[in-house]
Image 1 (tube, helix red, strand yellow):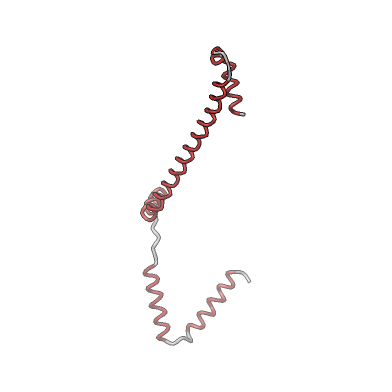
Image 2 (image 1 turned 90 degrees about the horizontal axis):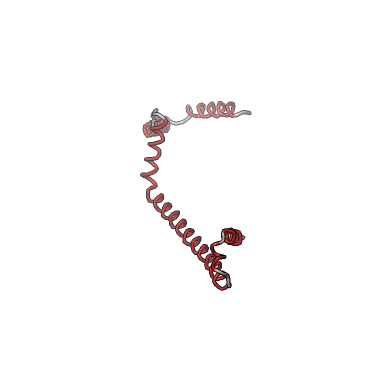
Length: 125
């Protein structure tokens, strides 16, 4: 049995039971249906761009506090990561600087281009 056939049989069964209901119950059901239809939102046709703008405005009205909180949380996370990354970079540079200062290298070694390339390759390893 497919969906359409099932829906048809269900409608037939409900309609047959409708005639057996007392008149007062039928009137209450009709009144409830009218009220439900009156409350039903009517779809309005509008352009796609107006729909997107309306959606964004509606979301901004209902979720502004939640969005601000989420934005602050993201900003805090980015700030924490940036601080942590800077601390790691400083720690790596401290190790390199202390190693260079503790060695007995001539001043000419620091101006050598190959030495700078060696520093970069050793720091990345």
